[in-house]
Image 1 (cartoon, one colour):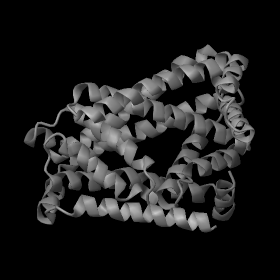
Image 2 (cartoon, helix red, strand yellow):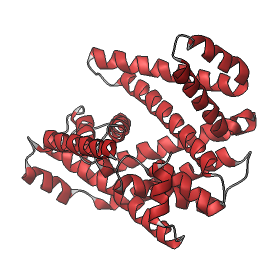
Image 3 (spheres, one colour):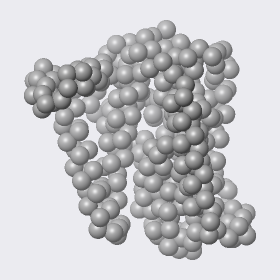
Image 4 (tube, one colour):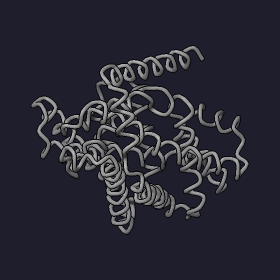
Length: 332
């Protein structure tokens, strides 16, 4: 309990620090003017690509269950929204476990197996984000140390993909290799790592069949294409393409910054970290601080509000009780 309070305090403190960094030099008049003059007709394509990404993410999640038991798309989507809602309003990023709990309740399925699929999906997201970062670094001029770090992460992502592929295809050989490499570690630590690998295998069971490879790859690419388009439509709404010559590549850069911001420990809803890092992504392309922050505020609302409302809707519609959900979420 004490450690949870410390984590919550640290998260809130980090959010406050990033909020200070974001707002310290902002001209609130220019910020409000940018928000007021934005062309909100672009919210229509924003909404379309956002729900396209959410639907595609639900579809990809369903692929992981197919070898065990097909899940209904409507329940996958509902559980995903409940998970996002939990991440937006609860601390400690409990949304992923809440999502696994929800699909388990809606489909009468093992919550442990469901959580394994969520873990594997997040691993794919991290790998995808690192690959996108590597691509952005190839075209966007960054300081040398950032470029070098990004390329190292890019190579790490490729190595991770190869390792996971060998883990699925050559399970015994890969685990044997792991034991040799970690032979110098204390016994309990090595055993814990091996149990994690076994848990990943439970989620990666779908990749034992090559017929799922293409569907996973295509759906993953489409998810990130939808994400980039969502950011780009918000950029068009603010007219940054006309005023500052912001290219499509900036959307990918902002998306990478968004991914980093939700990874940093912070308050529920990623307040502060989201605003500051998204703002910095646009500043790289010549957008002034005030306008960049107005963009970050609007994009944050567009990202958080619909998923939170939908999550609350599905939460109440399916009569999911808050207390057991949180208890289930905290336990893993």
